[in-house]
Amino acid sequence: MAEPLLVIEHLRVDFPEVVAVNDLSLALAAGDVCGLIGPNGAGKTTTMRAVSGLQEFTRGSVRVDGHELAREPDELKRRLGFMPDFCPTYDRLTTWEFLEHYARAFSVPDRNKRIDDCLQLTWLTDKRDAFCGQLSRGMKQRLVLAKTLLPDPQVLLLDEPASGLDPLGRIELRNILLQLRDAGKVVLISSHILSELSGFCNKAAIMERGRMVQSGTIAELGQQMKRRRMSVKWRTESTLAPAILAAASLKNLQLSPLGAIFDFEGEPDTLDDLLINLITQGVRVCEWRALGDDLEQIFLQSGAKELM
Image (cartoon, rainbow, N blue to C red; front, side, top):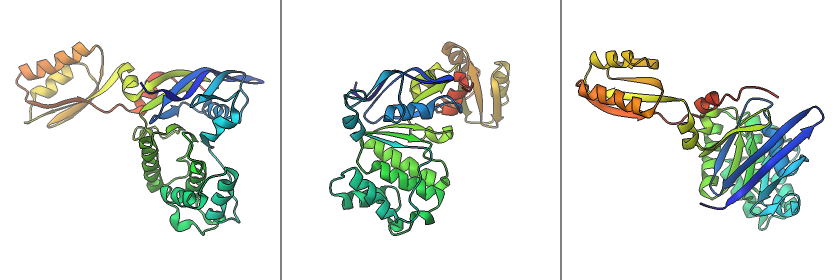
């Protein structure tokens, strides 16, 4: 297995009236895009702020590429980029001037080329001379992402980056994240749009009341679900197949002339027996598969619904 680039161990953050993050651990390797999900108040933003060094934590440790936040904060921060949920821009600067300001602050080498690359990556090249105050909310989100990418960090923390983006902007964001994944970056991203996270995340971490409820690859979390969404199709119209499925007491059974979708709860052997029964009864089954693991279903079945 690849060595993790981001390691969070037993992280705890205390506020006067509440434990915001409680004994949270997570490790992500190069190429991991992890969805940090949970209800409002679960501690997602506090976790990201603590990992980035913006929020003091009570105990625990954070390491990025072997550099520990407590001992080497400057080295760690050079390798980490944080995009908050809302980051103001300077209305009287152009997008180029805004990025140049931060490129100088980050001591980015060959900064003109790097600014051009980040503008292109975030689809803002045609807005390089536009004033920040003239940009839409979605364009400002992309500009802040471009700013976060300027120093080419190995680990990215993105807090609700899709906020304010229209459908096209969300597609563009997904493509950016896929490119970052292919480049070997680590991305920890929070979002309430769980259906979209499924399009680019290979891992998920579910929080509730400051604690980690579940974490792992999407496939691993899917295997832990008590309920599976299944699809079956047959070649010719049949009254027998619907009767067999109806008798199996399946959940949320949806029938069509040539197939069905249903939820299954139980042991895998029972599901195998259902398929064998269909075939031995003469149903010409041409498709039998579990539908893709859905983060919404994983989250709902995790039980993480309580607020802080």
